[in-house]
Amino acid sequence: MVTHLRLSIFFEEPNERFTIENFDFLLTKALQDLHGQVGAAITINVIEYSVIASNEYSVLISCPKKNLMKVWSSLTLTGTYQSNRCAVIVKNVTITPSETLNDIEVQQS
Picture 1 (spheres, rainbow, N blue to C red):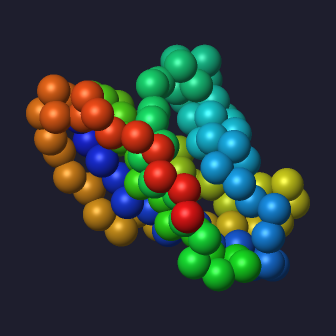
Picture 2: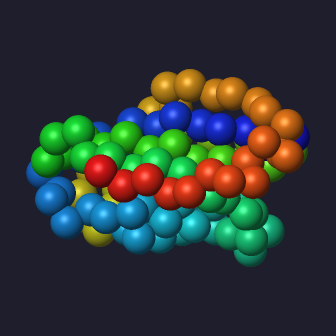
């Protein structure tokens, strides 16, 4: 089973340089900070990334269902990125069979 999380990321100060790669780093660091190397090793796919405003982003990620709580807790407890205060809010969670994800590609807008 695969879990999809729709996230909103808000920054206190505008952060026009926050890219999909920056989000991947933020996610890995959040998992490592809270759950150590085991957390950092969790497989997570970024399916969609979009800029809503200079301080707001929307991201759709997928992870194995068994790791949902580790991913969720790590992200929602994240409070800064490169000394800029931020908040990650989980907007939606869906669970789908893993075989339906074979042809999903990353979409960036």
